[in-house]
Amino acid sequence: MAAPSGAAAPPVRALGPELDALESDLLAAYRPPASIDKHPQFIAASALLKEARELDAAGLRYGALLRYLQAAMRVFTLRADAPAPDPEGLPARLEALDTRLRTGKVDHSIGRLYLETAQANPAFAEAIARDVLPRYFAVLTPAPASPKKPAPSVTVTLVRWPYT
Image (cartoon, rainbow, N blue to C red; front, side):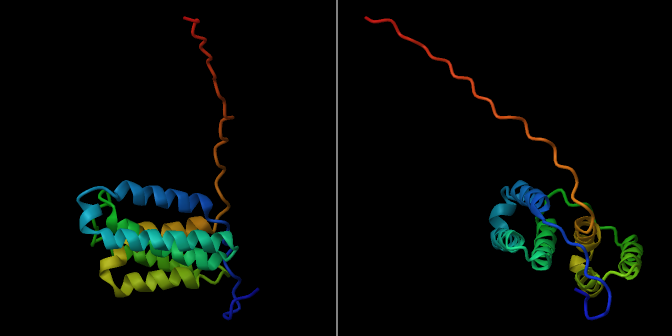
């Protein structure tokens, strides 16, 4: 189905591994004092992740992508290990992202939404340039091969007590 602009819709795949990784990042950030001071932000990010999972499970990939990126933006602001802002390099990164979103015959409306948010709101610009838009582009590529899970094994040891 073509987008209204005539450009092709982006090839969004299932987001399961990305949602799992983002949830791990969120849980890693959920430590005091941030978990106490920013509890409402953690709840909001968790709710966005849950909604992204539900949309992804229903096959509604674009809605899932939107919620996933919204959650990623919130999680980035909650992370204690977030990279320090780089105000000098930010305009160049945003320009490079703008160029990447303009090239090709794909409708990057969702990516452009975040780029324009970064241009209009400096508070979120660093998160969008460093984390959100790279996640957007990663979802448009084929899924990385997941490592093969080891076969489950169980060892049972029976101990017989002597009769007394």
